Amino acid sequence: MSHLIRRFVFVASLCVCWSVANVRAADKPVADTTPPSQAIIDLGIEPVPIITKPDDRYTAVKLDYAMVIGMDRTPKGRLWAAWVAGGDSEKGFFCAATSDDDGKTWSEPRLVIDPVDAPDGLARRALVGNFWTDPTGRLWLFYDQSLGYFDGRAGVWAISCDNPDAAEPVWSAPRRLANGATLNKPIVLKDGTWLLPVSLWTRRRIGPAPLRELFPELDDERMAHVYESTDQGATWTRRGGVLFPQSQFDEHMFVELKDGRLWMLARTDFGIAESYSSDAGRTWSEPQPSTIAHVCSRFHLRRLASGRLLLVKHGKIEERTPKRSHLSAYVSDDEGKTWRGGLMLDERSGVSYPDGFQHPDGTYYIVYDHNRGSDREILLARFTEDDILAGQFASPRSAAQVMVHKALHGLKTSK
Image (cartoon, rainbow, N blue to C red; front, side):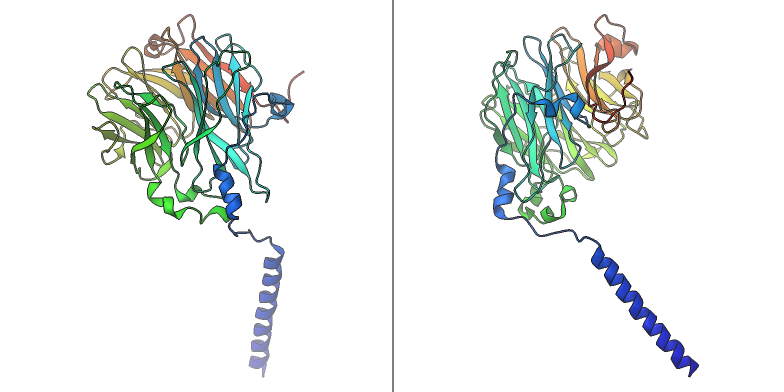
């Protein structure tokens, strides 16, 4: 009898536990995975207004996040810098400011791209892109936009400006160039062709939940692409691409080597991977790990006017730093086989995402961010090739940690 009583109590306890568990489960909110309507999905490829006269919602005292995008210089000397406010998330939006005194002081945002959320509440955002001054002197702003953090398609958009030094610059209407996103500047080949790096991210980046099953037809295109323009940006078409293993947004850059090949470097889970093309980017070698060790983060690679290559990365050439720290600049005289110098731009933790350009006098400018969510700083470093080789800021115009922007909302400031 006692055996039957114990069995009854055991079964009853199971029922009670099952009931409690189901009540608790019912109390928890269940994520809605219902895909949005086609009308909402189509908002992902609708242009959003470009705000050329931002109100005080976009001033430093109202912003609480700062992730660097990029920077370039106009032919008359104005600097344009862009960063993401709102967050590295579905809340992200673009801000851009200018400097007319070589970066010493900066305006409040003069241009903002802040997509309005969908009517059903699904977020729309603008997250990555870059400024680029083309060989004709026209200033471009490339940016991506998407539903949610990433809807599986996103899209590279561009606006351009023929008078970027004017008191009131006039920007073209937005044009959608491709699926995906671009973070780094185009390059110009010796034959005059413009090549733009475009990445269509992997499915693991898609979110929130209602978007996760969208666009399976694009899965074969999820790689680091090369887009070409042979008509000074009037049209852009895909030329080729590389599927990098363990991709982390790709964030790829390429340079044209002196032997005519293209050398592509990309961000992966294991650091930097590389691939080569002998036909101007149409086909590429099997990607391999680069000999340049690196933490999983953006880097900067560019051809200098002297013919050298410039590389900005974290730590020493052979070092994979534990964190995004010790942002340093190097030059190569042998097409990237070896690297010289090692100018420490910023040794602190939380410095990342370098981008830049070369001034006509040879000085190089790098913009980067510092602790996006806490210090919220966009900073500028200015240096020469001699500085890199000497390992110190020694040239008259060189400078380190120049403030471009600091988001101040909610921060305690000293009186």
